[in-house]
Length: 531
Image (cartoon, rainbow, N blue to C red; front, side, top):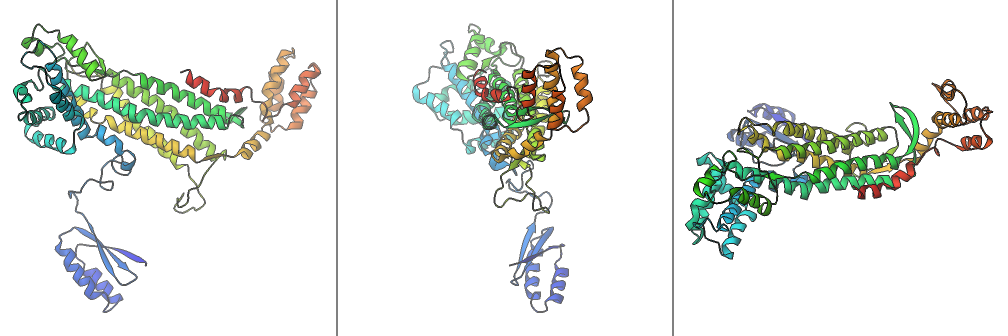
């Protein structure tokens, strides 16, 4: 069945008259009834489909500003829209729900910490069921729980205070917790809760998603290095022919570079604080002056939250570690972008072919094309990710005096740069899986590049004391298309060279002049393991 799409103005009478003239007696009753129905809906615009089986259907277009339900079609940003299905696991971490979940966990564990302090007699030790209940509030936090917090926030206009109120509401019907309600959020500033929540967010995202995606792309590139360790390839410096290598060794360069950055990313310590409004434990000490609150804070941050304790803070943990983390991720991304562009170029000159997938279309008008879309998608996402993370790295360590609020909205975008990064890693990995080396194309380029043997010839000439070897080869090769016979004739003309040296040079070809490129590619795993 074929269909014709017509976009109708607010009144359908024009379309009604048009179809009546074209198909007398056929469309008029149908369109008139449909027009009455659609116009009565009060929609700004609609589309009509006129089908070849004489049926008519309508598609309604929402008015500008309509309240559309969030979906992959209606999301403003592509991370929740077009790419939503690829990043859905990040939603439980970086979403508003995720932030509320981690904040709640911090609040509950802080109350548990107070109960474990003998000096805080007003909060007696909790029994095991109470401890489990508190942990349950933090770890088994539901969407409904988060929505309850958001409902309270409409009144408080304060996100962290809303969590405190919701927890108190839950606790008031519990025998033990109802007696210690006012120790919920005790001596805390909001940033005591927030900074630890953000550290937990980054810890989970890094360990569960970011590093595994990095490992996958590093492994894929390392596999290219192993597979093509012995495949000779003409190199290019400044876009011009240069000494040959192997494709495997050139892939090993990227795998090692990326692995170094991955190690640094994994090693960045995440920091936290629990030091009150300006970092001096003022409120804590006013209530319990005999407690070593610094020691308590260190124990809480390190042992209960699993991050490093920062002893010198203001109202905020200064976010320096975030700058370090995002700068390291940005370096990883820059190296991967370099890889994407090199692979794109190798595809362009025919060194790599791409496996075709049934049903996929390369171009809307050129049926023959198989475009390097995965590497292009990766490159675009890496650029977006780096622009965001470079801003995070530059902005987050700066806060006026003991604190300003400019970091708050910025911190809500932690997941955006990481999301674009993971998209890029996934795209590059997928692109690599489609690559097939065209060995014949590589061999053809090498066969047409005998001039690259000028380097070993002039180097051997130096060894045996022949004057001006570089200049002689330069005059012989520069700007010319050299051939095997031409290079052989030049070598044979060098009377000062020993016969064995001549024999070795004459036996060389562009495809065999590889140095230790193959060995370097084969040693990659050893060097990766040593990092």
